[in-house]
Image 1 (tube, rainbow, N blue to C red):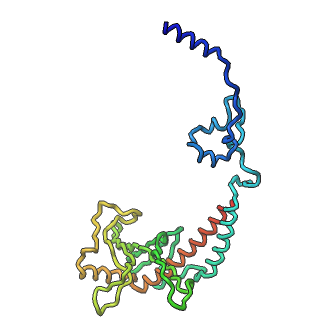
Image 2 (cartoon, rainbow, N blue to C red; image 1 turned 180 degrees about the horizontal axis):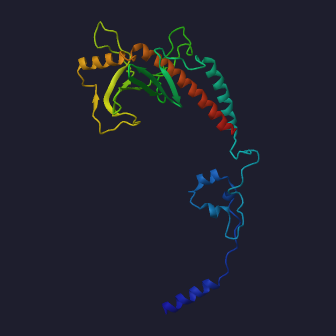
Image 3 (cartoon, rainbow, N blue to C red; image 1 turned 90 degrees about the horizontal axis):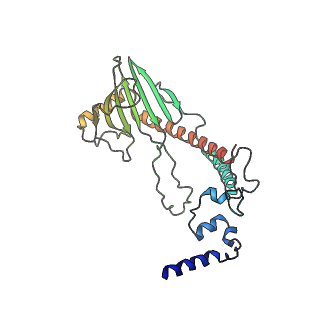
Length: 280
């Protein structure tokens, strides 16, 4: 009896007329951003574009309004326009404060080679070849905002940006098999080794022998760290560099050169960014 009743109920339900089709929900006419707030956006892009017959659904994935793109195919917004105008003003201001229109020269007969952000200084002395390599990327120490002193404007006490890059000194003698490499940097606190001695503005961090002509240091070669090095040995290494022209005067001129190169590359970056935003 129960089975027969269930079969009759199912047959009646199948013959019952379907309810009238309701109009599309107002949510479908809302922008996509409001739809995302209303419910999770889980439907595929293919379904949102239309049904299997190719019917376009109203209000979803409409083409962008006219005038937001140009022949380059890039998107242009009011934000992009404001960004480009800001960059134009910024480039003008940076060129006003640019100290060196061309890179300053190093004293001591150093030859300069520049490849993008990497610079190389070359010098030959009595059969030795000295090469100093540095990169201006991430070479400006972070600045900390300080409250202006009494009677001083905020823009008057703004610190000047100075590039102090790490640099590697490579000394190659007549024997072409190996090169003495010294990894140097500018410490934040300039501390001399003696009370009466002149403070060194740079220091040696690591020393190793590397195969001549190799661009990358080999981790399998022994590297001497100066953190726990005897001061007498360290002083001899500093004198070794000074005899080859890498002293405080060289380090000062290197800062000036690196700062000029960094500022030059920064202005070039702003110009490239402006062209990219304006799609030129």
